[in-house]
Length: 305
Image (tube, rainbow, N blue to C red):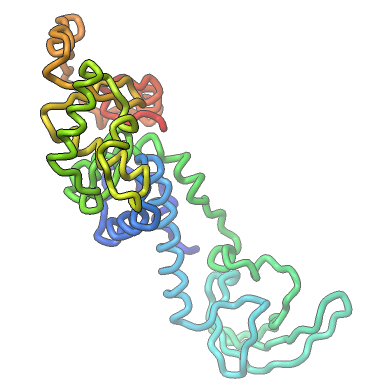
């Protein structure tokens, strides 16, 4: 049986790390459409990428021993063939003859000498429906392989927060308002444009105003994706001490710090948070799912998108 590391839930646990190939894949994902993405979206994409990459590696390994057998393929005398359905046994084609069965379209029959010396016949150039003609089944004819979408459902409670921590530790990505984007692809917002944002807020009593209300006067290049314009301006405002993001969860609203009420700048004692000392690695997936569903602002887990 073919061993697939990605099929084990533990593969997507705390030991998972981002490789250079993973970073390049994620970067290309952002370059394609310039769309900021949530941690959940990146987790789904990364799981699919790793599963497909593993499948391709297994295919190359098996093909190095010979052509993988599928009934739809044609074979020639002397060719080495690998049979996934026979526990990846290797054989050599000894003869090829026409097949005869009125229920099917014309096909060929190959006689193959297997490694153990035995000889068996197999269909070739068989274009009718057959499970082994499906590429998804060729490497695992008798094995149940969990799909990337199902793997995500099984591992999301652990993998999504772990991936978020890996991205936070990376200098390549920026997280704002529940979305990620590569730092090097963020549009430039200069000091003059930030001054315009300050003036707009000032004329509106300090705020609050959404980012979209500031953009028309900022003048970012029109060819930049609108979602990336919002993300880039948010990033610039977050980095400037004159501006404070005051929106509720899921909504970005900006206010001028110098015009904020005193009770906003200094919250009352009852709202101050004192973190407790406990081991998060002892929390089960069920407990992590409950924590994520509560969506508390002090939780280390990302909000459910």
